[in-house]
Length: 479
Image (cartoon, rainbow, N blue to C red; front, side):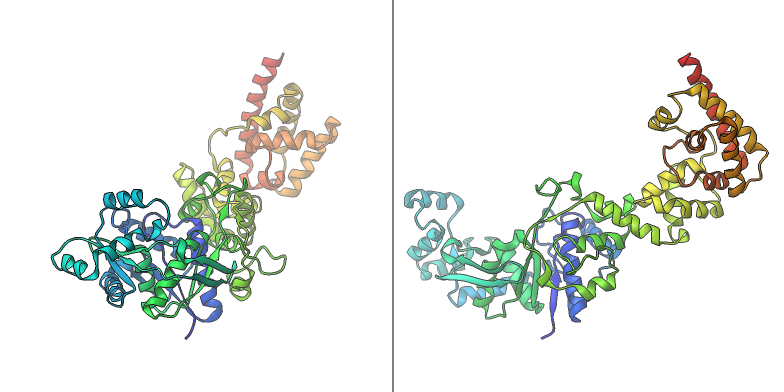
């Protein structure tokens, strides 16, 4: 049988990074092995499941480029089959009816003490007898159906953790059907996986405790047991469970922040897995070629937002300005800023190598497309203006006069600036840094002469005039 994996999210929220990694690892293995990826929506939690959440999960997968071969299938569509599987186990003696109420069960546990607590429901069922249980069920009395956990231990070879063992005595007789006839999680999952011929189950470490229960159900039903792989937890940089502040958020939130889908896929692929070499920037095809479950690490992965943004910046730098234009333009328009397409393309090309996200790129572009007065970064003013405002004022006045009569091209602008510095007998930096604050409002920018050329003569000189007024005010306050 060819490899068949499944991604089975519950539609109780949007697609978060942990689930996205599970989806990605299943997708990579399916594409590497030429197998099939089944998408199954586990929507049997009636109170929390919502169609809007299903739509958000599908949207997240689509944005990440994680396509599936079958589905989406809905767990709720298989309720009759799942219940039939549970009743079959009852008929074959692998399960029993439990008529005890929670109150009765608590009272029985109090009488018997902790010894054998996991088997108290079974003991009560045996005291009742199968014939009496059958009569009460036929009379319509509510009951659950519980699995009769066999003696011994349940062992499997996990592809990440190696051989794992669970003593069956530590596993309670799990409920298969609730008193309303609805299947429980473990019953539904095993029935669905068997029906969909799943050969490999790849999921998070938080499911390890479910695995021995499910293996026992596969065996009782006479179905092949899949190969299990449990992925390590994703932690924050502080070593604790990932929080929203540290990155535990929906993938759509990263899209809104300006993270590229290819960068996020590359990043989450390296959370708990490595290609066996020093590569960090990997195309999707390279990930597929290099992927293997054997290289998934046992220790928890660390979600480093700074590394994600660094990686995203690498992808941004590789994209053409025209590819980034729609995303940047829409963010500028939302902020009430517009610019001609030709100039904006040139601006993106100049700034993209310094940006880590599309959002940051649009923010960096803001001062360059602003028509009116710009805001000045306080740190930039403090460092390059406020220490000697009178001297900076005189230097910029001289420089403005020179620039006003200079041809507006990069070499001429640089030549005029350095000539002004020589005339003032100061280093060129004494003019360049204050000028950068004057025309961009920022501490840092691309090459200042490229910036001047891109802004144009009228806008650049107008901003220098605004800066001179601000410097006069600073100088007056100091004196």
